[in-house]
Length: 410
Image 1: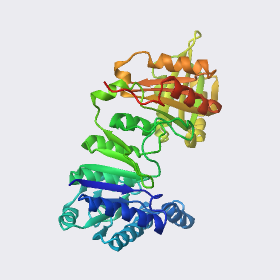
Image 2: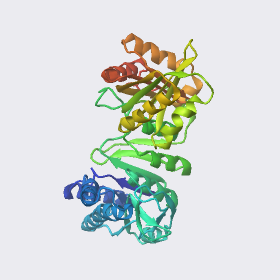
Image 3: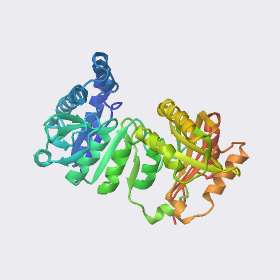
Protein backbone atom coordinates (compact mmCIF):
# COMPACT_ATOMS: atom_id res chain seq x y z
CA UNK A 1 0.00 0.00 0.00
CA UNK A 2 1.34 3.42 -0.98
CA UNK A 3 0.30 6.91 0.04
CA UNK A 4 -0.22 8.94 -3.12
CA UNK A 5 -1.13 12.61 -3.55
CA UNK A 6 -2.86 13.20 -6.87
CA UNK A 7 -3.39 16.66 -8.36
CA UNK A 8 -5.92 17.24 -11.16
CA UNK A 9 -5.85 20.50 -13.11
CA UNK A 10 -8.58 22.64 -14.57
CA UNK A 11 -8.76 20.70 -17.84
CA UNK A 12 -9.24 17.45 -15.90
CA UNK A 13 -12.05 19.12 -13.93
CA UNK A 14 -13.56 20.90 -16.94
CA UNK A 15 -17.05 19.36 -16.84
CA UNK A 16 -19.25 17.06 -14.75
CA UNK A 17 -18.35 14.19 -17.08
CA UNK A 18 -14.63 14.81 -16.58
CA UNK A 19 -15.03 15.12 -12.82
CA UNK A 20 -16.80 11.76 -12.77
CA UNK A 21 -13.94 10.34 -14.86
CA UNK A 22 -11.46 11.61 -12.25
CA UNK A 23 -13.56 10.00 -9.51
CA UNK A 24 -13.38 6.64 -11.27
CA UNK A 25 -9.59 6.95 -11.58
CA UNK A 26 -9.25 7.72 -7.87
CA UNK A 27 -11.60 4.84 -7.02
CA UNK A 28 -9.37 2.54 -9.06
CA UNK A 29 -6.33 3.46 -6.96
CA UNK A 30 -8.32 2.86 -3.76
CA UNK A 31 -9.33 -0.57 -5.03
CA UNK A 32 -5.64 -1.37 -5.50
CA UNK A 33 -5.16 -0.71 -1.78
CA UNK A 34 -3.52 2.70 -1.98
CA UNK A 35 -4.27 5.64 0.28
CA UNK A 36 -5.06 8.70 -1.85
CA UNK A 37 -5.22 12.44 -1.17
CA UNK A 38 -6.62 14.45 -4.09
CA UNK A 39 -5.83 18.09 -4.86
CA UNK A 40 -7.90 19.85 -7.51
CA UNK A 41 -7.96 23.11 -9.42
CA UNK A 42 -11.02 25.13 -10.32
CA UNK A 43 -12.89 24.03 -13.43
CA UNK A 44 -11.17 25.17 -16.61
CA UNK A 45 -11.63 28.92 -17.15
CA UNK A 46 -13.43 29.49 -13.84
CA UNK A 47 -10.67 31.45 -12.09
CA UNK A 48 -10.33 33.76 -15.09
CA UNK A 49 -14.10 34.30 -15.10
CA UNK A 50 -14.16 35.16 -11.40
CA UNK A 51 -11.21 37.56 -11.58
CA UNK A 52 -12.69 39.23 -14.65
CA UNK A 53 -15.85 39.92 -12.64
CA UNK A 54 -13.79 41.40 -9.82
CA UNK A 55 -11.74 43.58 -12.16
CA UNK A 56 -14.88 44.83 -13.93
CA UNK A 57 -15.87 46.39 -10.60
CA UNK A 58 -12.43 47.46 -9.39
CA UNK A 59 -9.42 46.89 -11.70
CA UNK A 60 -6.93 47.68 -8.91
CA UNK A 61 -9.01 46.54 -5.97
CA UNK A 62 -7.95 45.13 -2.61
CA UNK A 63 -5.94 41.91 -3.23
CA UNK A 64 -7.56 40.35 -0.16
CA UNK A 65 -10.97 40.54 -1.84
CA UNK A 66 -9.56 39.22 -5.11
CA UNK A 67 -8.34 36.17 -3.17
CA UNK A 68 -11.75 35.76 -1.56
CA UNK A 69 -13.49 35.48 -4.91
CA UNK A 70 -10.77 33.49 -6.72
CA UNK A 71 -10.75 30.81 -4.02
CA UNK A 72 -14.41 29.96 -4.63
CA UNK A 73 -13.55 28.20 -7.89
CA UNK A 74 -11.70 25.40 -6.12
CA UNK A 75 -14.36 25.24 -3.43
CA UNK A 76 -16.90 24.18 -6.05
CA UNK A 77 -14.49 21.62 -7.54
CA UNK A 78 -13.73 19.83 -4.28
CA UNK A 79 -17.41 19.41 -3.41
CA UNK A 80 -18.28 18.14 -6.89
CA UNK A 81 -15.46 15.59 -6.81
CA UNK A 82 -16.31 14.46 -3.27
CA UNK A 83 -19.91 13.86 -4.38
CA UNK A 84 -18.68 11.95 -7.44
CA UNK A 85 -16.43 9.75 -5.30
CA UNK A 86 -19.31 8.94 -2.95
CA UNK A 87 -21.36 8.04 -6.03
CA UNK A 88 -18.59 5.55 -6.90
CA UNK A 89 -18.81 4.04 -3.41
CA UNK A 90 -15.68 5.77 -2.08
CA UNK A 91 -15.90 7.68 1.20
CA UNK A 92 -14.62 11.23 0.62
CA UNK A 93 -14.44 14.56 2.41
CA UNK A 94 -13.73 17.96 0.84
CA UNK A 95 -11.40 20.55 2.40
CA UNK A 96 -10.71 24.14 1.50
CA UNK A 97 -7.15 25.31 2.06
CA UNK A 98 -8.01 26.97 5.37
CA UNK A 99 -9.86 23.88 6.64
CA UNK A 100 -6.74 21.70 6.35
CA UNK A 101 -5.22 24.22 7.32
CA UNK A 102 -2.54 25.29 4.83
CA UNK A 103 -0.91 28.33 6.45
CA UNK A 104 0.70 30.99 4.26
CA UNK A 105 2.31 34.41 4.48
CA UNK A 106 0.36 37.63 3.87
CA UNK A 107 1.26 38.18 0.19
CA UNK A 108 -2.24 38.05 -1.30
CA UNK A 109 -2.52 36.62 -4.85
CA UNK A 110 1.06 35.24 -4.60
CA UNK A 111 1.26 33.79 -1.10
CA UNK A 112 3.87 31.23 -0.07
CA UNK A 113 3.17 28.21 2.07
CA UNK A 114 4.66 28.37 5.57
CA UNK A 115 3.18 25.34 7.31
CA UNK A 116 0.68 22.52 6.80
CA UNK A 117 -1.13 20.70 9.59
CA UNK A 118 -1.81 17.27 8.14
CA UNK A 119 -3.48 15.75 11.21
CA UNK A 120 -7.04 15.93 9.83
CA UNK A 121 -6.00 14.40 6.53
CA UNK A 122 -4.09 11.59 8.26
CA UNK A 123 -7.13 10.82 10.41
CA UNK A 124 -9.28 10.58 7.28
CA UNK A 125 -6.78 8.30 5.56
CA UNK A 126 -6.67 6.01 8.60
CA UNK A 127 -10.48 5.87 8.49
CA UNK A 128 -10.50 4.91 4.81
CA UNK A 129 -11.66 8.34 3.63
CA UNK A 130 -10.24 10.15 0.57
CA UNK A 131 -9.54 13.79 1.43
CA UNK A 132 -10.22 16.14 -1.50
CA UNK A 133 -8.27 19.36 -1.01
CA UNK A 134 -8.65 22.69 -2.81
CA UNK A 135 -5.42 23.63 -4.55
CA UNK A 136 -4.09 27.16 -5.02
CA UNK A 137 -5.24 28.43 -1.63
CA UNK A 138 -4.55 28.65 2.08
CA UNK A 139 -5.02 30.92 5.06
CA UNK A 140 -2.94 33.91 6.06
CA UNK A 141 -1.70 32.85 9.50
CA UNK A 142 -1.40 36.40 10.81
CA UNK A 143 -4.86 37.70 9.85
CA UNK A 144 -6.94 34.59 9.19
CA UNK A 145 -7.75 35.79 5.66
CA UNK A 146 -8.07 33.53 2.63
CA UNK A 147 -4.91 33.58 0.52
CA UNK A 148 -4.05 32.25 -2.93
CA UNK A 149 -0.68 31.03 -4.20
CA UNK A 150 -0.66 32.60 -7.65
CA UNK A 151 -1.01 31.02 -11.07
CA UNK A 152 -0.26 27.28 -11.11
CA UNK A 153 -0.50 27.20 -7.33
CA UNK A 154 -2.42 23.93 -7.30
CA UNK A 155 0.72 22.07 -8.39
CA UNK A 156 2.53 23.61 -5.42
CA UNK A 157 -0.31 22.61 -3.09
CA UNK A 158 -0.06 19.01 -4.27
CA UNK A 159 3.71 18.81 -3.77
CA UNK A 160 3.54 20.59 -0.40
CA UNK A 161 0.89 18.16 0.88
CA UNK A 162 2.96 15.21 -0.37
CA UNK A 163 5.96 16.56 1.56
CA UNK A 164 3.94 17.21 4.72
CA UNK A 165 2.33 13.76 4.64
CA UNK A 166 5.57 12.03 3.56
CA UNK A 167 3.74 10.54 0.58
CA UNK A 168 5.41 7.91 -1.58
CA UNK A 169 4.66 9.93 -4.73
CA UNK A 170 2.97 13.08 -5.96
CA UNK A 171 1.16 12.58 -9.24
CA UNK A 172 0.31 15.60 -11.40
CA UNK A 173 -2.49 14.79 -13.84
CA UNK A 174 -2.86 17.06 -16.84
CA UNK A 175 -3.80 16.96 -20.53
CA UNK A 176 -0.40 15.58 -21.62
CA UNK A 177 0.92 12.11 -20.83
CA UNK A 178 4.32 13.21 -19.55
CA UNK A 179 7.32 15.44 -20.19
CA UNK A 180 8.54 15.38 -23.79
CA UNK A 181 11.92 16.09 -25.35
CA UNK A 182 10.25 19.18 -26.82
CA UNK A 183 6.77 20.43 -27.72
CA UNK A 184 5.19 17.74 -29.98
CA UNK A 185 3.22 20.47 -31.75
CA UNK A 186 6.51 21.85 -33.07
CA UNK A 187 8.40 18.57 -33.51
CA UNK A 188 6.09 15.58 -34.11
CA UNK A 189 9.00 13.21 -33.41
CA UNK A 190 9.29 14.46 -29.84
CA UNK A 191 9.59 11.57 -27.38
CA UNK A 192 8.10 11.16 -23.94
CA UNK A 193 10.77 10.87 -21.27
CA UNK A 194 10.49 8.03 -18.76
CA UNK A 195 12.54 9.96 -16.21
CA UNK A 196 14.06 13.41 -15.76
CA UNK A 197 15.90 15.07 -12.87
CA UNK A 198 14.47 17.86 -10.73
CA UNK A 199 17.29 20.09 -11.96
CA UNK A 200 16.48 19.48 -15.63
CA UNK A 201 12.74 19.92 -15.10
CA UNK A 202 13.34 23.18 -13.26
CA UNK A 203 15.41 24.49 -16.17
CA UNK A 204 12.80 23.39 -18.72
CA UNK A 205 9.99 25.00 -16.72
CA UNK A 206 11.90 28.27 -16.36
CA UNK A 207 12.77 28.29 -20.07
CA UNK A 208 9.24 28.00 -21.40
CA UNK A 209 7.98 24.44 -20.86
CA UNK A 210 4.40 24.71 -19.57
CA UNK A 211 4.03 21.18 -18.20
CA UNK A 212 4.74 22.06 -14.55
CA UNK A 213 4.77 25.23 -12.49
CA UNK A 214 8.29 26.26 -11.42
CA UNK A 215 7.52 26.61 -7.71
CA UNK A 216 6.15 23.08 -7.53
CA UNK A 217 9.35 21.64 -9.03
CA UNK A 218 11.49 23.70 -6.62
CA UNK A 219 9.39 22.43 -3.70
CA UNK A 220 9.62 18.80 -4.86
CA UNK A 221 13.38 19.02 -5.28
CA UNK A 222 13.89 20.68 -1.89
CA UNK A 223 11.86 18.07 -0.01
CA UNK A 224 12.80 15.12 -2.27
CA UNK A 225 9.20 14.35 -3.23
CA UNK A 226 9.06 11.94 -6.21
CA UNK A 227 6.95 13.72 -8.81
CA UNK A 228 5.18 12.06 -11.74
CA UNK A 229 3.43 13.78 -14.66
CA UNK A 230 0.57 11.78 -16.21
CA UNK A 231 -2.45 12.24 -18.43
CA UNK A 232 -5.93 12.23 -16.97
CA UNK A 233 -7.32 10.89 -20.22
CA UNK A 234 -4.69 8.42 -21.51
CA UNK A 235 -3.37 5.58 -19.36
CA UNK A 236 0.40 5.25 -19.18
CA UNK A 237 3.45 5.47 -16.90
CA UNK A 238 3.99 9.21 -17.44
CA UNK A 239 7.33 10.84 -16.59
CA UNK A 240 9.00 10.48 -13.20
CA UNK A 241 10.86 13.55 -11.92
CA UNK A 242 13.41 12.48 -9.36
CA UNK A 243 16.95 12.90 -8.03
CA UNK A 244 19.82 12.55 -10.48
CA UNK A 245 21.05 8.99 -11.02
CA UNK A 246 24.15 7.73 -12.76
CA UNK A 247 22.16 6.10 -15.55
CA UNK A 248 21.02 9.47 -16.89
CA UNK A 249 24.63 10.34 -17.72
CA UNK A 250 24.21 8.53 -21.05
CA UNK A 251 21.69 11.17 -22.18
CA UNK A 252 23.60 14.27 -23.25
CA UNK A 253 20.43 16.32 -23.72
CA UNK A 254 17.07 15.68 -22.08
CA UNK A 255 15.01 18.32 -23.81
CA UNK A 256 14.67 21.46 -25.89
CA UNK A 257 12.70 24.37 -24.47
CA UNK A 258 11.73 27.61 -26.18
CA UNK A 259 10.20 30.90 -25.18
CA UNK A 260 8.35 33.15 -27.62
CA UNK A 261 7.95 35.98 -25.10
CA UNK A 262 11.40 37.58 -25.45
CA UNK A 263 12.22 41.15 -26.48
CA UNK A 264 15.72 42.56 -26.98
CA UNK A 265 17.08 46.04 -26.22
CA UNK A 266 20.56 47.41 -26.96
CA UNK A 267 21.87 50.61 -25.41
CA UNK A 268 24.44 51.45 -28.07
CA UNK A 269 27.64 53.46 -27.71
CA UNK A 270 27.70 53.72 -23.93
CA UNK A 271 30.97 55.01 -22.44
CA UNK A 272 33.03 52.00 -21.36
CA UNK A 273 33.67 52.65 -17.67
CA UNK A 274 33.25 50.74 -14.38
CA UNK A 275 29.69 50.56 -13.12
CA UNK A 276 27.98 51.04 -16.48
CA UNK A 277 26.11 47.71 -16.20
CA UNK A 278 24.74 48.69 -12.79
CA UNK A 279 23.84 52.15 -14.11
CA UNK A 280 21.65 50.54 -16.79
CA UNK A 281 20.25 47.51 -14.98
CA UNK A 282 19.67 49.25 -11.64
CA UNK A 283 16.76 51.42 -12.85
CA UNK A 284 15.41 48.47 -14.86
CA UNK A 285 15.32 46.35 -11.72
CA UNK A 286 13.84 49.18 -9.67
CA UNK A 287 10.94 49.21 -12.14
CA UNK A 288 10.32 45.52 -11.33
CA UNK A 289 11.37 44.46 -14.84
CA UNK A 290 13.14 41.10 -14.86
CA UNK A 291 16.15 40.86 -17.17
CA UNK A 292 16.91 37.52 -18.77
CA UNK A 293 20.01 37.41 -21.00
CA UNK A 294 22.82 40.01 -21.05
CA UNK A 295 25.64 40.64 -23.54
CA UNK A 296 28.17 43.49 -23.42
CA UNK A 297 30.43 44.19 -26.39
CA UNK A 298 33.33 46.63 -26.02
CA UNK A 299 34.24 48.63 -29.13
CA UNK A 300 37.61 50.08 -30.21
CA UNK A 301 36.41 53.65 -29.68
CA UNK A 302 36.08 53.32 -25.91
CA UNK A 303 32.33 52.66 -25.95
CA UNK A 304 30.29 49.54 -25.32
CA UNK A 305 27.01 48.15 -26.64
CA UNK A 306 24.92 46.77 -23.76
CA UNK A 307 22.26 44.28 -24.88
CA UNK A 308 19.68 42.58 -22.70
CA UNK A 309 16.36 40.73 -23.06
CA UNK A 310 13.11 41.06 -21.12
CA UNK A 311 9.64 39.57 -21.28
CA UNK A 312 7.60 41.17 -24.07
CA UNK A 313 5.04 42.37 -21.53
CA UNK A 314 7.80 44.51 -19.98
CA UNK A 315 9.23 45.77 -23.28
CA UNK A 316 7.53 49.18 -23.39
CA UNK A 317 8.53 49.98 -19.82
CA UNK A 318 12.12 48.81 -20.38
CA UNK A 319 12.36 50.85 -23.60
CA UNK A 320 11.15 53.99 -21.86
CA UNK A 321 13.74 53.61 -19.11
CA UNK A 322 16.55 52.69 -21.53
CA UNK A 323 15.93 55.74 -23.70
CA UNK A 324 16.06 57.99 -20.66
CA UNK A 325 19.29 56.34 -19.49
CA UNK A 326 20.82 56.60 -22.95
CA UNK A 327 20.43 60.37 -22.80
CA UNK A 328 21.83 60.60 -19.30
CA UNK A 329 24.83 58.36 -20.07
CA UNK A 330 25.70 59.95 -23.41
CA UNK A 331 24.91 56.80 -25.41
CA UNK A 332 24.29 56.83 -29.16
CA UNK A 333 20.77 55.44 -28.82
CA UNK A 334 18.63 52.37 -28.15
CA UNK A 335 18.05 49.59 -30.69
CA UNK A 336 15.28 47.04 -30.21
CA UNK A 337 13.93 43.75 -31.55
CA UNK A 338 10.66 42.06 -30.64
CA UNK A 339 10.72 39.38 -33.35
CA UNK A 340 13.04 37.09 -31.38
CA UNK A 341 12.76 33.83 -29.44
CA UNK A 342 14.97 31.90 -27.05
CA UNK A 343 15.79 28.25 -27.74
CA UNK A 344 17.55 26.18 -25.06
CA UNK A 345 19.17 22.77 -24.72
CA UNK A 346 18.90 21.20 -21.25
CA UNK A 347 20.65 18.11 -19.91
CA UNK A 348 22.68 16.99 -16.91
CA UNK A 349 24.91 15.12 -19.37
CA UNK A 350 26.52 18.46 -20.24
CA UNK A 351 28.48 18.22 -16.99
CA UNK A 352 30.49 15.27 -18.25
CA UNK A 353 30.57 15.87 -22.01
CA UNK A 354 32.36 18.63 -23.91
CA UNK A 355 31.35 20.08 -27.26
CA UNK A 356 27.59 20.37 -26.70
CA UNK A 357 27.53 24.12 -27.43
CA UNK A 358 29.70 23.86 -30.54
CA UNK A 359 27.52 21.03 -31.87
CA UNK A 360 24.44 23.21 -31.29
CA UNK A 361 25.97 26.20 -33.05
CA UNK A 362 27.14 24.06 -35.99
CA UNK A 363 23.69 22.53 -36.44
CA UNK A 364 22.00 25.94 -36.43
CA UNK A 365 24.56 27.36 -38.86
CA UNK A 366 23.94 24.42 -41.19
CA UNK A 367 20.24 25.35 -41.22
CA UNK A 368 21.08 28.97 -42.03
CA UNK A 369 20.00 30.26 -38.61
CA UNK A 370 21.90 33.23 -37.19
CA UNK A 371 22.52 33.44 -33.43
CA UNK A 372 22.03 36.86 -31.82
CA UNK A 373 22.82 36.06 -28.17
CA UNK A 374 24.23 33.10 -26.21
CA UNK A 375 23.88 32.14 -22.56
CA UNK A 376 25.23 29.03 -20.83
CA UNK A 377 25.09 27.34 -17.45
CA UNK A 378 26.21 23.96 -16.13
CA UNK A 379 23.30 22.06 -17.69
CA UNK A 380 21.90 24.55 -20.23
CA UNK A 381 22.80 26.36 -23.44
CA UNK A 382 20.41 29.08 -24.66
CA UNK A 383 20.46 31.11 -27.85
CA UNK A 384 18.37 34.02 -29.10
CA UNK A 385 17.35 33.79 -32.76
CA UNK A 386 14.80 35.38 -35.07
CA UNK A 387 11.26 34.21 -34.36
CA UNK A 388 10.68 33.08 -37.94
CA UNK A 389 13.28 30.32 -37.45
CA UNK A 390 11.88 28.89 -34.21
CA UNK A 391 10.32 25.68 -35.54
CA UNK A 392 13.23 25.02 -37.89
CA UNK A 393 15.70 25.47 -35.02
CA UNK A 394 13.83 23.10 -32.71
CA UNK A 395 13.52 20.39 -35.36
CA UNK A 396 17.15 20.82 -36.41
CA UNK A 397 18.47 20.48 -32.85
CA UNK A 398 16.10 17.62 -32.04
CA UNK A 399 17.55 15.67 -34.96
CA UNK A 400 21.17 16.73 -34.36
CA UNK A 401 21.12 15.38 -30.81
CA UNK A 402 19.10 12.25 -31.65
CA UNK A 403 16.32 13.05 -29.21
CA UNK A 404 13.76 10.98 -31.10
CA UNK A 405 15.60 7.86 -29.89
CA UNK A 406 15.74 6.74 -26.28
CA UNK A 407 19.32 6.69 -24.92
CA UNK A 408 20.91 3.31 -24.30
CA UNK A 409 21.50 2.40 -20.67
CA UNK A 410 24.75 0.65 -19.87
